Length: 208
Image (tube, rainbow, N blue to C red):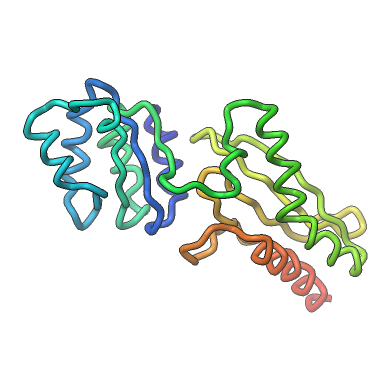
């Protein structure tokens, strides 16, 4: 996996979210480097299994190449990526979530996901915002590095964008109008989206 793509994904993950690194058949050296970071930086779901692999230098089976772990801080994402990127095929999130289909490599699946997410996450907010005479423009894009798919919901008033939020397909998290992820260890919900979009309108109204 490209180092910059690996780092970009790690930088988006909340410390409470499990990460799965799918190691290459010859990638045990990368696992050793990750383990060397230590328990204060990386917490493995099954450290006993990891130590056994490192001692034997054998994966034993393909399932063991899917290593689940947590990182103590994504401030060191570049260092983590340097340790493992060359030794892994891909990096995944260990939990399922409602935005995951946005991250599909197939365009049709991303398009279908965008329709479903718009109906589930944005429709309630769009109906509420309509009372204020503003609209919501929805778009989906793949950003690099990282091959990350985000859905943007931009609040528009008289043709001008007054603020936007994003739904992140990789982590399932909400990106607020200031461009930062929410601090909560939680996945985006329709209620969170509605509150964030309403907050944009309220902020614009109070500024007038």
